[in-house]
Length: 401
Image 1 (spheres, one colour):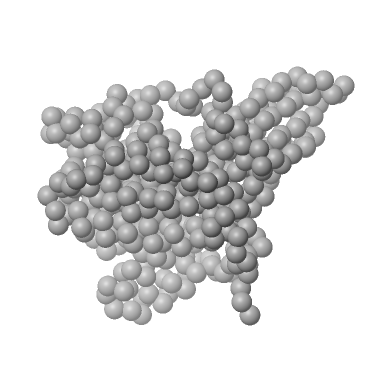
Image 2: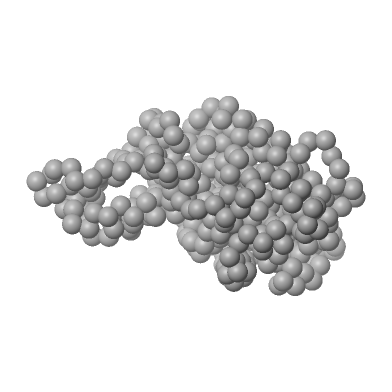
């Protein structure tokens, strides 16, 4: 299993699979074909269906700069390996094909091709929650200590940077108002939620603050701001909201936040390894569901939960999002994505409370829910997997006057 650095990708929104991934692929292809005269990129499946709303073409064009480039859109063509497929071609001045490369944006900004399964080398020897629980139990260690055992020492500096970027995205989002880019003309709400919340009594005040933190990050993401994919851009508001909430309400210090990020990264890594975090492959259950599992586990750790209570909390985070479709209106990471992050953060708090009331024993394991989520996602029709052809995406979301 790869480093948890791959779960926390720092970059610009609005989509890790549709913006970060294609940008990375374009830069890699260009670096390998610097002497080509012109280029052609064909986007398939989900990348083509919602690429314009996700700024996929902008990300690719930005990577190629002034180079001659043609982008083709094939939304009805799905490549078997993954729904987020793209084909790059390089030509000389006589229009002879120099190089062709097909690759896939598998979520979280990661890119693979027909010859690779992952971008990175494995650093963990275990690949299931059950194995990790057994290791922690035998060695008397917690999840964050397990991370410390297998990662390089610089993981703590990296996670500290992750927290700084998350914190800054909340801070910017709470200060900014106006309308989000795109045809929906959706107004920002984080600032008003935070302001109104100050006038309420506890616990509504706390819940309003939690909502505002998630909204702040997601509105920054929708605007192309700098955020952390955790595990994706479309689910980037859940983890920051929980961490900021616990910092403010429970006075969790930076060390506790960094350790919570380590545990949450491990949880997200298990989903990515054994299922998928790509909305185009398994629906929003793989994005917001995984983010909720990460945040639920992190919250329980910050409240002093045992490894078994943390596992239970994470299991509920994913279980209660099973079947969730990915149906962005107009192909934008706004409706219903932004609200889903806010409510996933709220659920994470509830999962933490529930898990702490138990001894951590329960009937359905985290590993079983991960397997179920993947099977459920594969069974979803393509119109419910980030193509904007079904679900909420078919409705006119323009404001009623």
